[in-house]
Each structure stands twice: as C-alpha cells, then as structure tokens.
Image (tube, rainbow, N blue to C red):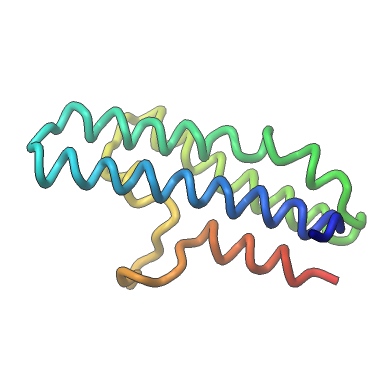
Length: 124
C-alpha cells in the first residue's frame, strides 16, 4: 500500500464515496420498497451531512499534498461541502439526493466524488 499523500487522500475519498453509495442504496430501498418517505429524508440528510463535513475532515490529508496541488484539492472539497450545506440549509431533499450527480448522469457511471478521488490518485 502506498503512503504517498495523494493516494492516502484518494483512498479516504473512495471510502467516503463508498459510504455515501451505501446510504443512497438504503435510501432507495426505504423509498421504493418500504414507501417510507421519512426514512428516505433522514438518509438523504445523512448523505448531505457527510458531504458537508468533507472539507473539514479531509483537510489534514490534503495538507500533506504538494502546495501546487493542495489549493485545487481544498477548493474542490470545499465546493462539495458548500453544496451539501446549502442543501441542508434549504431543507431540499431533492437537492440532497442530487448531490454528486451532474445532469446527464446514468446509472453505473462514477459520481463526482468518485471522479475526484480518481483525479487525486493520478496526481504526480
């Protein structure tokens, strides 16, 4: 296992993305199989809270990157967190569910966080 700063950060981002995919999977089940809109809303809130804390939680890992990479990485993590915080502040479950998914997204594609982790992994 590599301990290069970009790989460590990318591994952490992958882990966060995996946790978020699991939350989304549970949310899909409770909405479409259990018809439990309240549980769905809480799971989407959980997803948004996780993303809202991404920049703060990832900062110690990002600080290990080279200076020229750090600014871009921190800025992008803050955008993820800011979007999630906005969704939470306005209370929009739709906005929370759409976090990480651009227009034109199709099932099976990587979401924005997974793409970001892949980009960080390729930094040299």
